[in-house]
Image: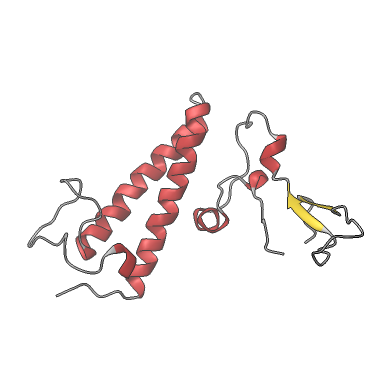
Length: 67
Length: 87
C-alpha cells in the first residue's frame, strides 16, 4: 500500500562531497500532525490489533515502515 | 514448583496486555474528552473485563502486582520464577 505519510527529498550534493551519495531520503509525517482536537467516536482497531499497531484509533495509525 | 508456561498462559497474557493497552488509550483520550460518554462507557466495560481476566490469571499463575494489590494464596509466590523477562 503506498504510504502517503512518507515524504521524500534529495539532499544537496556538492562536487567535493567526500561521502558516497545517499540520493533520495525520506521522512514520515504522521496523521496526528493534521489533527488539532480529536473528534469523538473515531473508528477503533480491535484490542489485539491496537496492541500490535500501537494505537487504538484507526485514523492515527502510522506504519513507519523501515526503508 | 514453578508454573507451566503453556499455550493457555500466553494467550491469557496476550489478552491482558491488549486490554491494558486499550485502557491506556482510553484513559489518555478521556483526559482530554471527559464528557465523551461513549468512551467512558467503553472504558468501564474494559475495566470490568480487565478485572476478570486478571483474576483468572492470578488464580492460575500467581500475583500480577505487589503490595497487596494481588492475592498470594498458599505460598509467597512473588519471588519465584518466572520473572517478567523470563516469560
